[in-house]
Length: 108
Image (cartoon, rainbow, N blue to C red; front, side, top):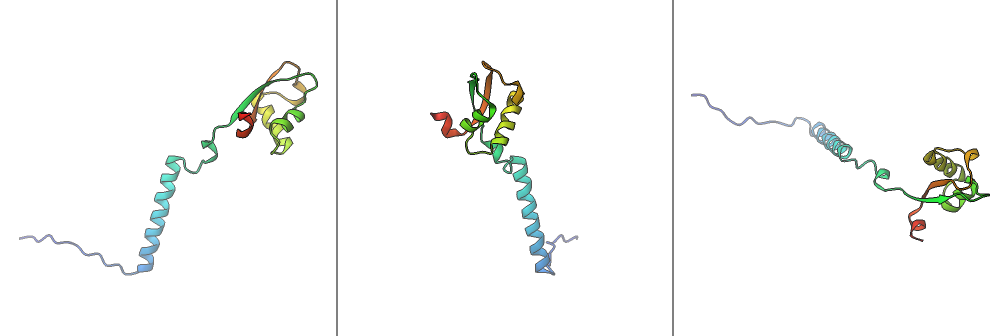
């Protein structure tokens, strides 16, 4: 008759076992975080835009300062130019621009 018994595992080094479990937990958490997209917090907020019509005398500097006051004006101009696929020299009266704004600004 063959006896099938439970095999006992003996932990020889508790430090090595603890390190293994810790690393395993970190890998599981990192994998779940990557799969669920928890590391991309910035992408979870939806950017809001306002459309404005350029008036004679308007510049990207003025518009960036008015609609994006809490950011570096150079970065604001670059963002507005990229969104609208235009440059500072291509701005003309009557043109419709899409400008990203802060949430408080859109409620007004």
